[in-house]
Length: 77
Image (cartoon, rainbow, N blue to C red):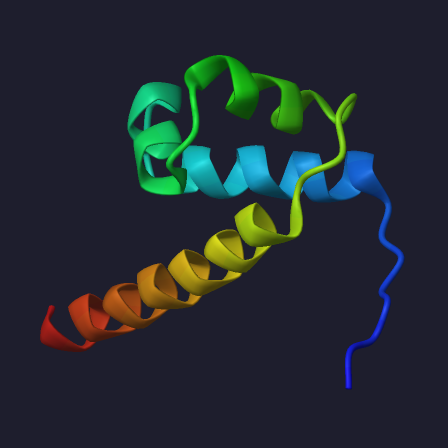
C-alpha cells in the first residue's frame, strides 16, 4: 500500500542544500551521486521545482549512510 505525503518543497530544498554543505560536497559531486545534472540540483535546491520521489529516496538513504559513517568516525577518535 502506498501513501501520499505532503511536504513543504522549500523546506526540503533548504534541508537538501544544508545536507550537501554539511557533507562538504560541491554541487557537481552531489549531482553525480543523485544521477542528475548540476542545473537540476540547483533547481531542486532553490525550492522552485518539486523534487522527484527517487531523488528524495536517495537523499534519505545517503543521509543515513553519512550519519552512520560520522558516528563510526567519532567513536574512533
